[in-house]
Length: 432
Image 1 (cartoon, one colour):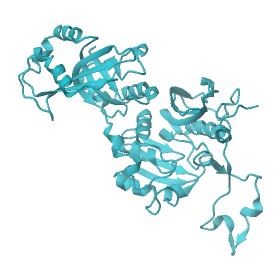
Image 2 (tube, rainbow, N blue to C red; image 1 turned 45 degrees about the horizontal axis):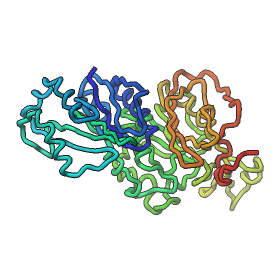
Image 3 (cartoon, rainbow, N blue to C red; image 1 turned 90 degrees about the vertical axis):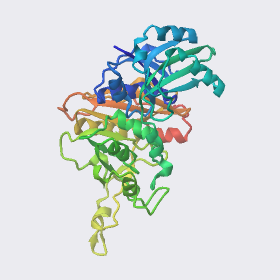
Image 4 (cartoon, rainbow, N blue to C red; image 1 turned 120 degrees about the vertical axis):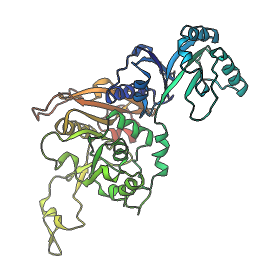
């Protein structure tokens, strides 16, 4: 198959291949590459795809891919590149009279304008006779000098056939939103999670810890119908957060014109949810509360049930029936949050549906066994975002078979994220 150069954004290096694989499945585009050739410190990866049209389709909604380039040549010197390009001169005829432009870039070094012009002139042997157009050119050619720590360059050359959707990062920038809170997920990662969930037209996506609704926005942008819930209705209504009095999540739905695809939001404890039995959602996308920026809570009382408090009359009305009644809550330990989330996904996802969520871990204690397992959920991706003494990992799981039992899965040992909130505020001191 023809070769193409994937030009990644040089950040979130642990997330780039999982997004590429997710988009390959989502767009039904066969992509072949050697995972051993992936270098985290490099923005380039050579892949094989059947056609330019399929390559463009693959990356059209990518967040961590800048562009994809039809491979024409590479080497450590321009002489090497020229020699490889000249081996397939039949390509040139296709663009001989087309309008064209050259984009010259460098990674690990800056090039002056004079150096860029010299690079472009070096490809004059292509003998293109069409007009040069910096906008809307029929053909765009890409040259990049990549420098590593040895300062030895690797030169890449080819024709740009498609670009990603990194412009969406600016469009969904949280600073531009009418409503946000202290747990609002940044735009880039919210969009990336929508891709990991393969959100698209015809899907029904649920966020059980919806907060200010970032994932409702991004999944709805890609065509999915979404719904969210939270135990704290103040975040949903906009009576808590950095920007109050703007109608909460609804203000953002109107801002991004996705009201028709966000079915609703509701206030309830996701561990005691009112959903009908059986599979319901095509994806669950969420950021569970760690208890750091927002306390993790579930319904209950720290001292146990006290029926006399719930059933007492206030001005002749049962306490629980009053409009301003707020159910009592208790702390929700992190390992229980994740355990319940997996049980929810196992029951409520359709077969083939995906669970995409963040898992906090302690850097010095993490092992792969800390990622919870479930018999009907298969781990697809585990990508780390480090923060020094701790990390959060974007976990993607896929339901591979129907749930035929509600038996709880008991971990063999306590995971490193157990009591994460206490560990965080105690600066992750070793557990005695």
